[in-house]
Length: 342
Image (cartoon, rainbow, N blue to C red; front, side, top):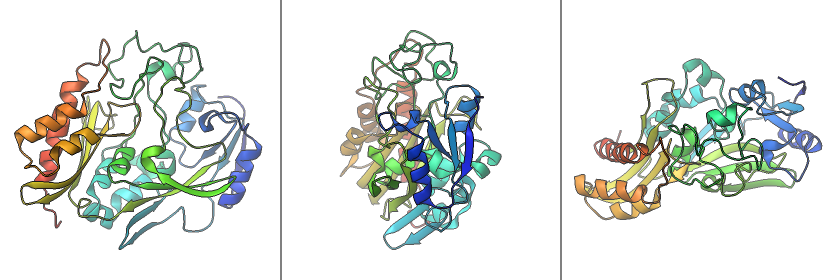
């Protein structure tokens, strides 16, 4: 690990100003010389591997006030502060009852020890687990712009099949992001130019020709929290995660589903996919097929086919398409069979 300066922030405004002073303005946020740290479970890992090389690290854990620390529930929906730990969200009774897809994404991620430490601000910004990204001896456009993508012609069993490009096929590794994109969440951000709110679905960028530019965040911008609108679909929601082993493993394929049913008919449906895409992925085409129809074997299979119609596979990851389709079908049926009044 390289030397760096460590400081603690007392409030969000001072934190933004400090990171801005230590960061160039013409680089993506993830490449800035100044970085925030809270739980640190992802960034410190990459600092040890020499993948991330900040020279200034700002600890935001002591920021005063409740805006970033609390889970709030109201008639309009749920707000989760960015300094809330995964375990706190997992244990929250309102989330368990009214937003079970969020609870699922917490419970199925990492170990309880990591969930006790990991913040929900950092969670959505965790970077890919691609082995070629993590090993600095390999070329990687995401790590070293313009160097190439070793995964395309390498061992790519874990890699993405949706949203990929000729420059990068790395998958987004998180789970919580799928719940947020499925539930139409927004994210509150504080930056050098003041506060702003954006759709969570717009936060992450697909790789295109610039895979090193991963999010819409600018240097110095700090995530304050997430807003999840209330709706009849939130209680009937699930996250199904398929892995090589049944615990403490990243998804091979995953599906977050939220349903609003009128008897056997789908009034509204939200589907987001994990483990198969370059960013949190909303399957809009699949949703359109299901709306207004009975949710049965035929309609679920049609929707699953539509979700992967744009898939681009490589030598070792073509299996993700059929398994991903079955994951969607399983998630749809498990969600359909939940009691909406739970």
